[in-house]
Length: 460
Image (cartoon, rainbow, N blue to C red):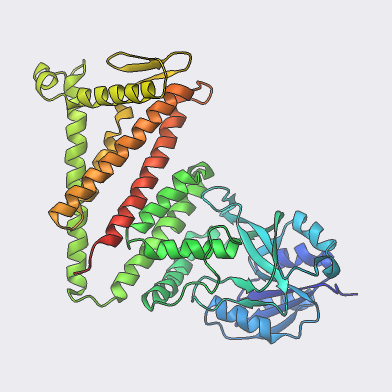
């Protein structure tokens, strides 16, 4: 007897590599399987017949429209459906929950989010914001629909109450992507669709945008933030966010290849195609020239600033490059260090702490302290920010205000960091951890500050 509660709907196009894995994962549920195929010429249809799936054909235009067609193509007899791509399958923990599932126990619920584990070339992408990842895959057949507001990204929406099964997983692993040319060709096609959606100002998401809403609403909120970020800059920001803030660097070699391709390369290609599609009064050649000029200015200013800092450090510190003249007349690095120590000491004294300082250290009675080495000064981030502020095409006064405000922000965050270290530093956590946390905070703050500043620039 067929499952009276749940049916499965699957999209296919030449999926002989994936279908046995998917069908075997749901075999014990004894559910009806519906397959909407878009013209397979391999063994896909024979495999569907072997597993007793009902198959219909519909020409493929894009994923949202294909899912919309799939939801209307079949006479589904169960109250619930689970919609899966062919490269996904059910993990044992989810299979166990579905085996015990009863419609009566979920009478007030219309949708259920599963937790996805994504694999790339055999590697589970655990970090970088890719796990946990909640996807609305199970819903009441009469309440769910495919969101048609985008041409590339597809998601299901549902009215009414939803639940999240955090410990019930679907596994997504496209075995075709073990060949990197397949991944690149596929995402090149996706970039066309995504660029077209953005260029035509299509509305992103039909869901409400709420940072503390359900997973679909949080995604909508992130989409709107993304849409407001400057083109060509946002792939760098997102890649840095994935790699550092979301610890994507811990995903190993294959994981880092994935983060680079998916977070940076793919989104940079999308932005380039968006720029190509826009009609600019200056013309594409003028756009390219302006972007090239900005990048050249940025690299030159950064290199000069960074080399001056390193040269001053090398010339004023004992060693092979030491110069008494530089130490006596140009050692602003030492003044920079004294500034942090003295200001931090005054702040801590104002808060009631007993502080003792030397030329390079600060200690707090009955607490901890710190020793400022050159890397603590933040000259690297100052060089990056200075290069961006001076290279970005804008009036001199606005540049000056922006640069002064940003450096003030960097100094303030560094002082907060030093004061907290002086009071709470615990050797068990490691000195490097506070450096990492500081870099997280300062780069995120500067990114938000820079985006706000760019959005406030009046159009000419």
